[in-house]
Length: 95
Image 1 (spheres, helix red, strand yellow):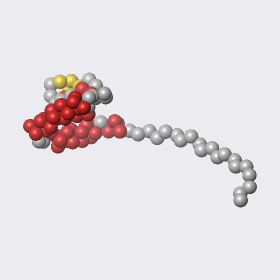
Image 2 (image 1 turned 180 degrees about the vertical axis):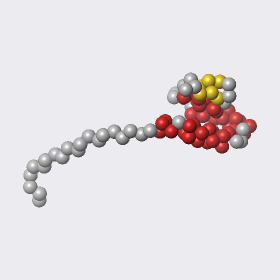
Image 3 (image 1 turned 90 degrees about the horizontal axis):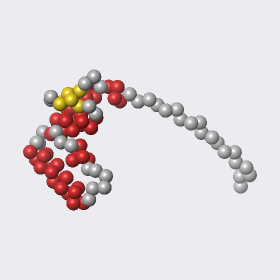
Image 4 (image 1 turned 120 degrees about the vertical axis):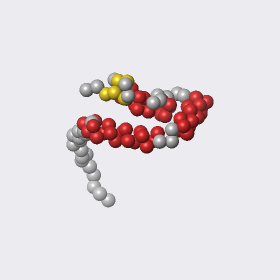
């Protein structure tokens, strides 16, 4: 199945998120090892985008709900078997 956002095909989950957001995911989540200066610049850019697009958070929630509705198998959870608990025998006499 192919997924398109507008006219762009989303090949990976990162592509999907970037196309849905209209910005790179790293802008919102940051990157490992970024400096304080880089973080401040990234957060300033994010604030500017939110100021220019006040409906963006609502749009993102709507898109996420649509993806979940169309792809319920994304959240199929398989319970893993828990290993049996071993009890250690205690030696000695209780006081």
